[in-house]
Image 1 (cartoon, rainbow, N blue to C red):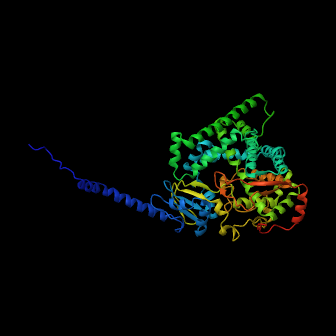
Image 2 (image 1 turned 90 degrees about the vertical axis):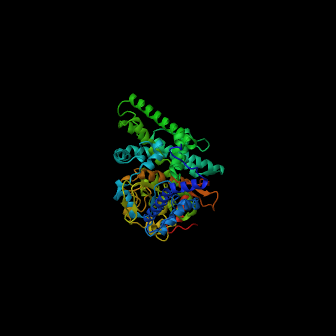
Image 3 (image 1 turned 120 degrees about the vertical axis):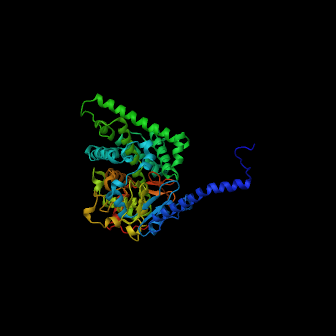
Amino acid sequence: MPPPFFIPPLTWNSCCKYSMICYMPWLVACCLLLLLYSVRLRSGWSHGHGPRSYPVIGCLVAFYQNRFRLLDWYTELLAASPTQTIVVDRLGARRTVVTANPVNVEHILKGNFGNYPKGKPFTDILGDLLGTGIFNVDGELWYAQRKLVSHEFSARALRELEFAVLEDEARDRLVPALGLAAGRGDAVDMQDLLRRFSFDVICRVSLGVDPGCLDPALPAPRLAAAFDAAAGIIARRGAAPVAAVWKAKRALDLGSERRLREEIRVIHEAVMDLIRTRKKERALVNDGDGRRSDLLSRMIECGYPDEAIRDMVISFIMAGRDTTSSALTWFFWLLTRHRDVEREVLREIAGGASHAAGGQGKMRVLHAALCETMRLYPPVAWDSKHAAAGDVLPDGTRVERGDRVTYFQYGMGRMESIWGADAAEFSLQRWLSLPEDNAPPAAVAGVSPFKYPVFQAGPRTCLGKEMAFVQMKFVASTVLRRFELAPVDEGRVPVFLPLMTAHMAGGLNVTVRSRGDQITAAAAAAGSKPVAAGAPN
């Protein structure tokens, strides 16, 4: 009797034919999805301007071709776009809208501020280190911390502490270190020296402890080394083309993510130990007796939980440790290429206002030189938000929910549409030509913060902006008053490295020569003529 059913034997050809019939609908569906995805991407472009994008891989080819010049490539793309906005499709991630248009920047940072939080992709990158610190949160938690910190930063005691720390560090460490190099004829890496100086200052102001970094002959203290290592690994997280890679390494505790976990443990334990020690000290003294003015002590007095205090303090250290040193490194390099500007700054320093508390605010030429430095070499090259809901930017660019929206400070500083035909030149006149009533300590000399978002703008404007200018002016005047710097390699044009905070690749190696009484002669040589274009001489 035959079996109840019969299955004929399958030949190779019949198997292939059967497989093709089964999978054909899936192949057609995938092709249609890729086509729709490609059309969707093109529909969001800013008038068709942006790197060429392909289905699935996005702009990977263009990224690879420009991997060694990403900042200049982005700048060229933005300059070529009639709206100074482009849309970039990234492999394995939501698309990115990049803009150098001040009107768009104002919309993102102020006009529709609530729609552009930092977002989860950003807070995931920094969350292990910063936790719920002010620079890594949005909404009500951010607002509450902002209100507290704004009050503390406006306190006279904190400003006085900062200036006292600056004087101590300069007198006891910075000047002797440069004097020793001048006496021996040694070269010194100004970037490294300035980073050590800034770390000492920010730790003394934020934590009330002196890490003693400013001795180039000694290795960096463990806490400073931990911050350096953590910042480097987190920067690589942010630059990773596919976030899933570093997230998988973190989950498996492998490679750089394991190193990051260890460095964060060092940082967290050090700060928590300080919090516990400071609380014990406070319990042993009467109210008002021996009260400290550092940020950590003031937050303990507010009664915040230990972990919240830890996260806030670490956030301030991360924000302040390298931003001023980055700006000063490029400032000193630019002065070596523009000696006419240096002479004008020296003439102003000779007036003596720089060494009185608050006197830096009167230094208009120095302020202009620092602003111009940060226009061309901003401490933070770009900043990103993530759209909470769909939107249309003022220039007509469509933004979809979840899109990454980036304003590109580095490119904005080089846009002729913003700064004129001489945008690539180092010229103080774009600042000194402003009315006198816009002189410091006004914002950045009367220039719109949406045109010059070096300190962000809108509700998230940097609270430490004025403190940063005080530190930069103090260090600049202290060094220039006493020493003349010359690059070891005069012909070298340094590479701008856009890490978490921008660095100068290879550092700034200079020879140091004591000025003696030359500052008076230099000031006299400068005369009273205002600085003009600032071509290298």
